[in-house]
Length: 185
Image (cartoon, rainbow, N blue to C red; front, side):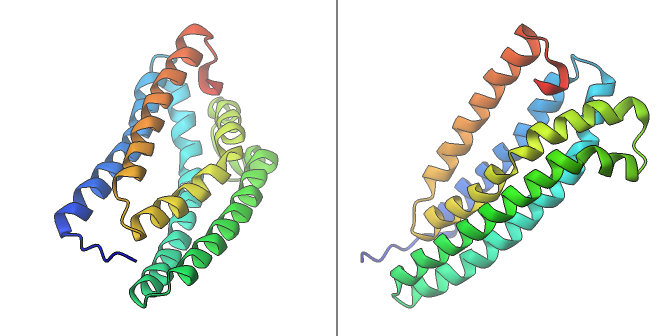
């Protein structure tokens, strides 16, 4: 295995830009959704609070997987490191399916339980079902990004995030402005 040494700058800038672009996705969603109305923005903001908690859980698991992977890579056990990534992907994937299903089936009940205003409950529930149902993607993306970074591929996760932002922007425009789907768009 070729030994690759990375400087802090080589590690920092792609990761920092990737995180910035990941956060920009939410800002773009909010800006584009503001054309639908304040109620839609408030509903999505409310729903994103719960989805954000799940994403945080997935990130914690991914960080643990990264620690195990990098220790094994440093010890010259790249096979064990790959196995750790598979275990992390399976665990996060199963957790993503469970939590996504939970949001699909019980999202509206959660919103009612925490006392979300009646005017926001329906659009927030729609958003929770659509975006929360896709929680499995939020679960496995940090695992594969971490895997690529651990093996020295810093730019590929960044390229994936750039592509996702472009796709998000285009699909938002289509569903919000062409099909007028509101929060569901």
